[in-house]
Length: 288
Image (cartoon, rainbow, N blue to C red; front, side, top):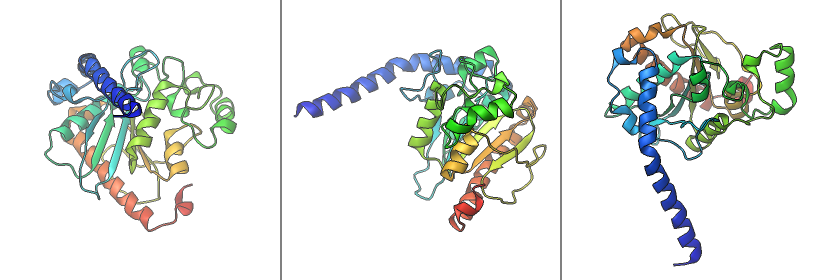
């Protein structure tokens, strides 16, 4: 066996060993997170869910907290891939509760129509401080490396956001560990649709082809637009991957398990309709 092969095998074994060492801490962090999020105890028992949490080696927050995910894959080649990201802003805990509920439902299903990856808490440091921004005071949803970030992110923040510190895009694009983690997931998983769960505007905001979607009680469809450094611009405008932003009005939705599940089913429907439309259309006609 060559020295090169031995070297790469040692890297693989050390990575597996590191993951095994991290698992008890990851399990504990996940379980503590469930206890702090609103509405989860009344919905389901999450005692076994956290045992299925996974973490990429590089995915830790600025303060060193794990950024974990859950995955439910469908082996059918025609299955669509959906990436869900929530608690991008640390003061929106209801978004994380919905993501956990979706993950728990999926992992208890024998089969799912689509393949799912769910990151329930992208910004654990901001969540600890109950702030929109991360530990460095950066709005993660203005920090993605969009094609226009270098020449417009700062200017947009200064002119349109009036230098609002809650929406500070950072000093450079993708400067934050949390943004790098999300970008790694986007690159490796290659989703067909991204679902970003937020609060508190109470609407459904879609960056994608102009389609007519079914109504959802309490959440009207309304386009807010995308911004330099936002995931909507990073994925849809730059990469032709639609982004559905769910803006919950409050944690009240968690009082109805069925409504939370119906919202998840809606995202699957939007994914299928969007991809069918894009396959028949020119991207240049619809990306704006």
